[in-house]
Length: 466
Ligand code: SF4
Image 1 (tube, rainbow, N blue to C red):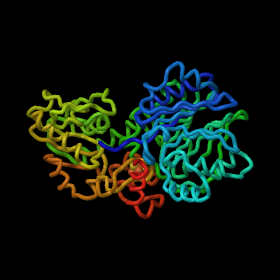
Image 2: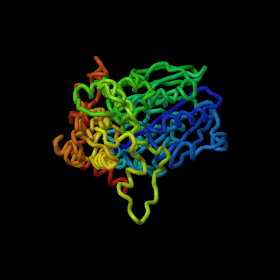
Image 3: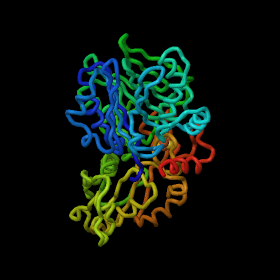
Image 4: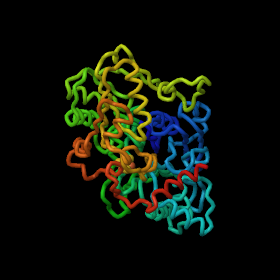
């Protein structure tokens, strides 16, 4: 699977080891972004920040954590979905303005960021980053509202699209979720401390108790006077990202009120019923295909075996020898287990086909390892449309599901058969909540108006990285 993950956010208020726990929380959320990491803390008077490119584990030590003093902190792991991936775009973004210091962490993507940015630049704003998130801070800094809280609401009200935000001022932690609730954001407690984070797996690691999700459209504020919630935005149709269940979130998390493992396993069961095929063994494409493959094998009454092994320690780049190695890019991450695949009819289970190039290499690798037949099963429908809400998808023209029939895709990836889960099957595990989900990348129907000129929008994202 070649979708890039988006971002993970974490915030804590009222704990003597706030920065250390934020660091651990980000550790648990590392799967949501590996390009950069940052933590900001408050000692009640001033904010401190540390940001770096790369993994959480490589960028924090005793000294950096000690420097991040105070009882509250916010943190962010980033994969850039808008703007480039340099350190200047790493989050939290910290500014000082008439309303005081504020640090912001954002998961999602604002669909009207460019319009807002153009307007702000015309009126004199000077931007430090190319990320859509900075737009919110400019709106906040310009606001004439009487209090920081009112200024924040006034600025965020102008944003459209997906935003799960965690913000820190000198004496408050604030969590905001867009009225559609595209991205997850959840609330926990650790003793007297409050925690907000993208997924419950971050709560588990620090032994915190899950309380509830931050609701779509909710602004949750905790400060010296205690915690409160307000709902300042007009209500909107809920649009939780179904792809969090298919791929993004960790299977040990509860997201949108459901166990990711349960949903993902059920997708596999349904896929087996919708797309049966005679075979000897079910093999997941690790790691993201494992839960669906488990469900598939269970429903099909076939053995599940780890016929592809993933190297978990692959860095961001590797030096390829001059004498080229066939399928090096895939092979460095995945290697076939010949004793499982040889002479057998194999069902490969994966969660998506984006451009088709990786699937083609994996099918070939399994065939070369001796499989007599290779059948590919995908635990969601074909991806036919880009995401504008925080998931890094290529342009429509590069999505093989948008430009080719299923039979053409099968021929391209050279599988003996190819089967996708239907849209109905995808939504079945979320039961009567199905109308609360976004499925735009499978249907092309968008719950929030997307930029009219899609190509120009995506070009803009490209242009920004030059
Ligand atoms: S378009 Fe797809 S990936 Fe984007 S929010 Fe909707 S379901 Fe999620």
